[in-house]
Image (cartoon, rainbow, N blue to C red; front, side, top):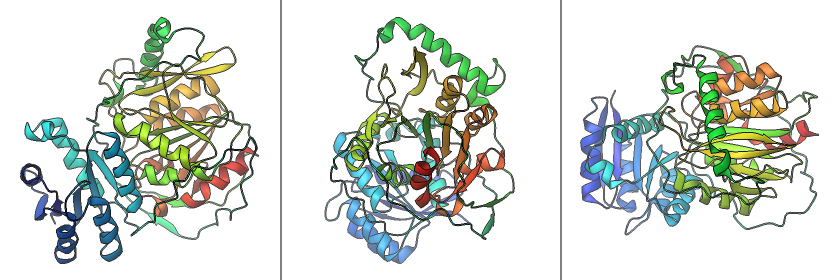
Length: 432
């Protein structure tokens, strides 16, 4: 059966181009077009599409309001289109909080010229979103800034309940090629004792070694590697403390990740270790995302900058469109932000950042993979597991897309499989 698509956008030009692109794929069918959110809501109820592409800014009814109404009346997977601006990014996160599944930058230039990479990425995203898990309307979390005391405790939450539900699933979601380049340039932190420019050659050399380590063959770029999903049975596990010491918490996520992270980071106290987050996201969105999380959290949340020194109680979001690796400077760890040379499918890439952490922290990483399409993070977690680090996977029932967590479950590197709502409290318990 063809994937039925409803296009909601006030630009007739954009609607026309999207329809041409979607219908160039025989497995996709555009069943309707709406010029504003109000029409989009009515046509969703009438046509029952498999997926909706939704503009954020429209007359009569904007995309955020439309998403809320659709999720309340007729929950349907929605892919948002957003402008590459601060306002566009902020509105997009509001749409995700309202129930949208994923988003893409609204790039008229790519669409107008039918650039093959952009088209491939768009079609892949729509297909993945159409197969995602829809939760219905999700109220947006409060974004009021809260005070950050020097010490804090997290109120007790129920531990993950042992589930008797076993799920068997075969995932066919392929890793999509990221064509979203960063529109921002990273700035250098004054915290570093040596200028990043002086060590950029060493950082690039380290980055090259990480790529070779991940591919297993110096002659094979990481982007050329393949991962095959298989049948498996996964069981949600009850939390059990590992008893190991952890020097850092590392989180990798993709589709559905922004909302999942908002259910983890704001629930954490000011930890005595740093937290790093690698979320697949365009470069113009990560700073806005960090600011939104920071306003909700006791942790200090920032977009990572080249030269930053990792500090306890701070959460570092990998900047979109670039790679984030780390280097040891005395007893401290410094962030290095690298412009990828086009060898990797994801910018940022979870595998790259996790492999870099493995070189510095060995078995002292508490790593977890959340909802996301593809298998990014699997090889990085395998390297960490060999060193003795603890690996967690989000369970299938709470994932928007069960791809990345499924990969580490299939690879037998997940120490625990946990529901999203329990991960924050389990982090606190694990860290003691």
